[in-house]
Length: 495
Image (cartoon, rainbow, N blue to C red):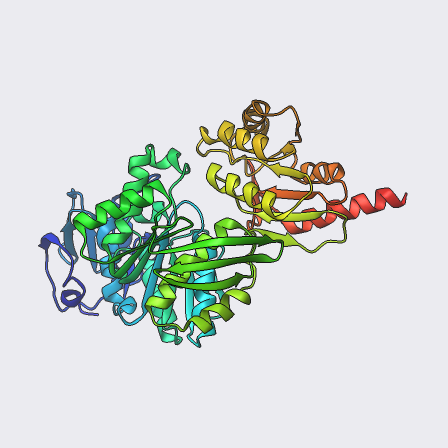
């Protein structure tokens, strides 16, 4: 692509050695990926600054450089483009380089502390039931139709990768894209250049404050999505931060806002919920019209996700009959309120809940679905928001009958320090708590506490396939660990 065309939408402070006919073969922000004819974008990072690698990029053949800082050296054969914010510009450049792929697709972005993953899968299933081919970008992995694409460990990839993925989806026949948009991704401008038709706000509760520092910063990051939306913003009106978002959008945006929740007064709301281990029945209310529906995933919080998905589908004129069928046949989402099939006299639930609100909602839903005692096994991540540890402990102590606090990605911290901080919160509510450092042993111990009819809840890991320690990252699988614990129990009883 000619440099002149590539820079068409970039806000430029100045250009040195301009060569508008220069042919750009590739855009890179990692100097190791530069090939001859590349445009190198120097981005300041948390660990290192891309400006330090401009010389290396040029030595490998970069034809042009985008930078935000003044440089000490300029080479005559290289084009230098100065911008105010090179990270912001990367998404704009990527969109242009890949042909603005999101403009010809229906794109829905979902943000919020909890619910993003389940909601993307619901939307994908609804529109695929209608016959559309859909793409998904999210926490577990990226999908093009049914094909899994590596997400490189990020809920929201870097903006250049986002544009590359969308281009591939478009080329392979996807008409719709459903995308988790994390607060980190928004704060770091990773969705710049994405043409969003719909934005969905699920909720805002304590998480990631180690990064954002304050709730205000956290909210402001989430709110950025809704100023890129063209058709409608769909907002959880039961959430106080959702109502605040509605007020903000009514003042600063001309895009329609549609609210949802479980309380009367929202544009769409649900009532008469009937909970079961295999799903939830509910009545959807819109104005004077009511629809009785069944969602094939259990949990009250899943009903919130379903209403948001229904709104997006109805707004796109998907027939209610198709929506009804899709919700009733919705497959489970990996590690989200997942009831494990095991040969045991008790049930096992696996869920990714790793924030105070998600843990509370999980345990509230489990209490409504199951009649036996709740035995909860969980922990908190290391090198993350330390303030939420005693909070999650208190929630565990309030809602679970027995609590086993164990490890969950301790990272550089001492696992026992994290466990003790969580357990201290549990003990503010109950003395029914034990601590077991190794997660595999913690789950086995939790299983030994279960009586017939109880439910063993394993929270925090969900889909994750690793345990991050100080000096190594180990493979880990929650499903296998649970099955191994039950097999050990069975073997012990037989002997």
